[in-house]
Length: 382
Image (cartoon, rainbow, N blue to C red; front, side):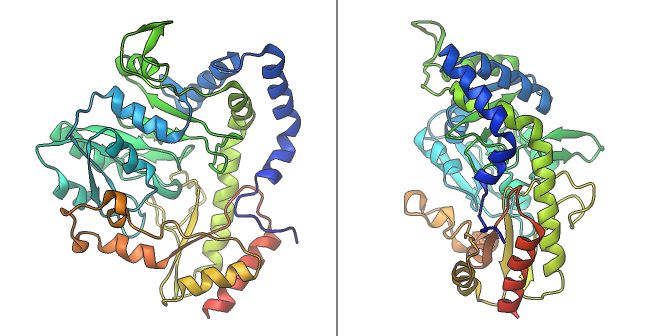
């Protein structure tokens, strides 16, 4: 059996090695390293894939979130509501911009923002909602958009983990994750479903005026060189990373299918064990044959018998990488602690940090590896 990787980037690279090499050589031969032709090619291809009017590439996913908030003109003290159970980058940029982060609990099944908690958190100072499409599954965007419309709020989608996922609205129409709110953001960190070989990110919007503002912000506030019309930053996707992304984008749907197939194997193997709660999808609960709402950036179990930490160590001892996303709630982090928060406001998050464990999830998992992983877990849990 091949060595099990948490994310097998080397295995994924081999089938596209020639395409990637040719693309990178094109960059080297033209020396168009910043904002070159391959960046524009990737931008256009991603706009077509997402069916969105504007993609603005940038240097990383954290910058994408910050730039999106800057572009919307949020002001110091404005409240921005987001989920407590996610990576710190989401709340980090809110704090960096001197906005006021407001953390709320998450749904027990999808781990995405809890709609009732979101409603309770709205005040006259609330200006934006940042739903995080956690682990690859789209948040309840029908409800988020309804709340945003009622209270005249911006919706900024943190789509760092769910590029390629679809959201089906109540009326049956579909949109790609990240293209639903006023603006969406993503990361191309190497381990993402669509990852480059360094850092990279992008912002999406259908708003022409906002797109114009964002394009200035990413480039020092310039539309004409040395003329600074808005306060900006230096955040651009480099051409070598665009070369890699151009090679991978046509394969994104197949990458997501491979992840869903691995997730189905895991779910089936663990289905009858009462000590394990497997991931649920918002559309139909299980991972149905037509599932497109979840792209399984992570495959995350809940271990309910109090032995999560023991299992974490046991799997490492058996050569099975795994991770705990996330071991500390954002409201408990030293950097984001706030007297406004009560532990009773976060029952789901406080339970998840004690029970979740994420298993190897990538495009190269084979049946032998999956069987070894699931048998090792079942033998231990039982």
